[in-house]
Length: 341
Image (cartoon, rainbow, N blue to C red; front, side, top):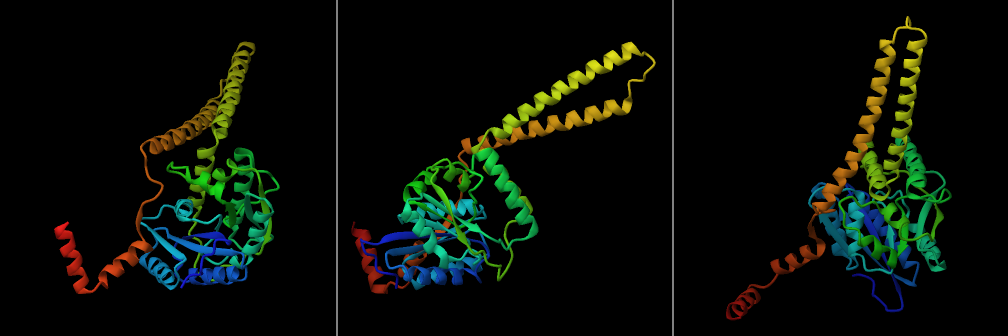
């Protein structure tokens, strides 16, 4: 069964959000076991969260959890997203160090020793830094845009590279767990908790099966979530732009009046007027939409919408299995005890 827990060992919790990964997650789990068995100073557990994927993924997770006691599975009632799945895994984790990685094998668990070494050296959070990421063109472009926006809006150091493969200390996880609003964004939570964040070089693998669950719309929603949930700088930028364009409109209006006074024969210019109306109307709608995004998210958070809904866990499955295999005589005896209590 699972590895024997010794008090002198540091426990590491691996948190894996899963979506349609029934073909890849067994290899990820096996790689984690092999890597940790080569590090005798550590004990480990693996927490897999099925993020509303079809039943085949959850069945595979349950099968993996039956093999060893240090594996746990959580199944969402619907798809809530990668960051919600990570939040559920972090709340379940009991290790002194938490390692978050993907379910597709592109983030090599075999290199987890680099993360643990940096943690032992004193870092609070360690992110993988890929020399060459094997991602699609729009994902690579999105990563660069995300990095730039994180620097400008969330205060991320320019030299720090972030990814979905990272490790953090227990106290950082405890701060992350306190966030209960509807739109979790791990990077924002980590950045506001500690500044002791470093990188380690890691090899990013090519995908061996399936395709990424992140569409462009999901990526855009994730970015928007991170920047509106943890920064008011977009609102300040909208206010600044609104002020600039209002001043430009005022100056242009004065210019038009003076031009008409100096030369009454000059036509006012229907096309120029329509251009100004469309431009400033578009800017106004953009700023109103941005403010509405903040208001909508505030409303959803105030209404206590859950980050995720758990349908069941592997512990519940195992308990039900034990009940199903309970001898008939034992069931009758238990029933008799309940009736007399």
